[in-house]
Amino acid sequence: MKKNRFILITFLLITLAIIYSLFCPFIIVKPDEKIPFMNKELNVGDTISPLKNIKINSVYLVFSRNDIKELPIGISKNKVLMTNEKEILEELSKIFVFKYTGKDLATCESYICIYNSNELIFKSTLSIKDTLWGLQNRSYGWSEAVHNIRLIEILKKFKPCYYPILFL
Image 1: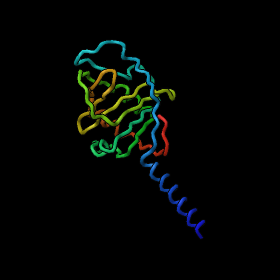
Image 2: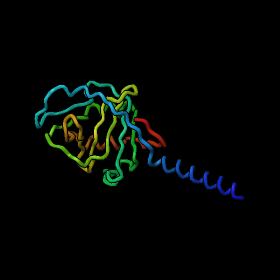
Image 3: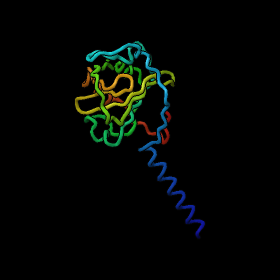
Image 4: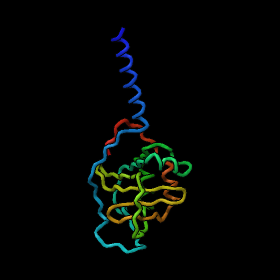
């Protein structure tokens, strides 16, 4: 009797852990990324186009719990969103332009990972609110999106990612 109870409780705990990890996956991120555009000094007001002339295969957005609550209407309220659809990636590459502010924003907890052939080519923390999208990166600090509304419209096309363990 005790053996059956132990097996049942173990099974239930494992099932609950699997269900929990589908909605809050364990995420392991590669530490190195290539930022091919950061070989010059930036002045306030300069534009940064990290994806210009770069082929990308997939984009992952990982949101903190606080940021999920503040996402604009229409963007899926999941911890991880991703896309590997060619049309979306091409459109994103064209309008992924940011204006250098010379400032830093210390409260960014969410981040974006961009890949080409399973190689991390760009990683940055980000903040997305109703009409504001910005990146915080160790190379250039806080930069605000030039095409906020269009970028948010593209994010609405990203799909939730339901993997219990995600290697980015």
